[in-house]
Image (cartoon, rainbow over all chains, first blue to last red; front, top):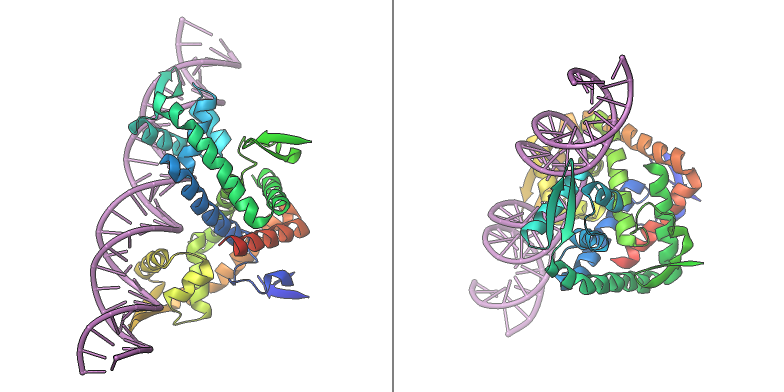
Amino acid sequence: MYVQTFDLYLPRAMEKCKSKYCGCLYYSANALARIMTKIADEEFAVAGLSSSYAFLLMSVIEKPGIQPKEISLHMQLTPSTVTRLIEKMEYRGLLSRKPNGRTTEVYPTEDAVALFPKIKDAWKKLYCRYTEILGKSKANELTILINQANEILE
Amino acid sequence: MYVQTFDLYLPRAMEKCKSKYCGCLYYSANALARIMTKIADEEFAVAGLSSSYAFLLMSVIEKPGIQPKEISLHMQLTPSTVTRLIEKMEYRGLLSRKPNGRTTEVYPTEDAVALFPKIKDAWKKLYCRYTEILGKSKANELTILINQANEILE
DNA sequence: TTAGTCTATTTGTATGTACAAACATTTGAT
DNA sequence: ATCAAATGTTTGTACATACAAATAGACTAA
């Protein structure tokens, strides 16, 4: 009924996995993240963006003047990562920064606003794509479980 | 009963999530991967390794002479990534490469073998750590669901 | 046997992410 | 009013990962 890994006992469902490491959540989570990122990047490519930038843009467009700190909470990325993302978008002419005291306000440019519908659309397609493959209820169930885990683990 | 995102309807369980993007599997999966990687790196630090290198080492020690191709299947990483990982381990004196025809055989050094128990131990602790937080059955359930998704999505 | 295809590996290049430290501003305590 | 602590942001640096192209060996069909 159980298979040995970690010198512990794990459910047999893991026995027929491709990888020896499937029983490890670190490993599986990273594999899933790589797969999903690939799919997401494919979809957001119609807007000329990779996935992180698409989410960044959505955050800024929905709340012009938003601060990096808040973005980093939305996206669950470190502040330094957010700074780096914003920098690149500024360079590409899609975002602008306005220093304000110790904080910074981030605004979308007109080009960014024009891009917004495409991004939203790509996001919807991304959802449909994995949902069609996994089945809607399976996909939602998985997403919810992962969110719960994220909340507890942090 | 449902919340709107993607202009679609998603279960309310996602409503009270930290991030607006929790309904998106791409997003949640990446967040989980980042959290798990951080935890894993903390545990494997006792062996002076970050997580990917630890898994690489385990693969090589359990099958000395293993080829990069097979490693890339075990680890679900691209061949070029595996080459890069091996290179660094070679530089650190933990692995050696022996070209053989069009393939390459990878061997552990004595130092690597000596490190093995520490790595195994760290891996076990990693498992215990997230299992204690999530609960054993939740953790296993989640891992299995993710593996299933990985298999279908690829 | 030779040409052409297939397969394994490596290399050049780019990207996303993080940590730690530096900096700048605000707040709070005395 | 001043100085210390807290907070938000950026910078220097490093790392894991990937894609596309280059290389090199192995297999196959004529």
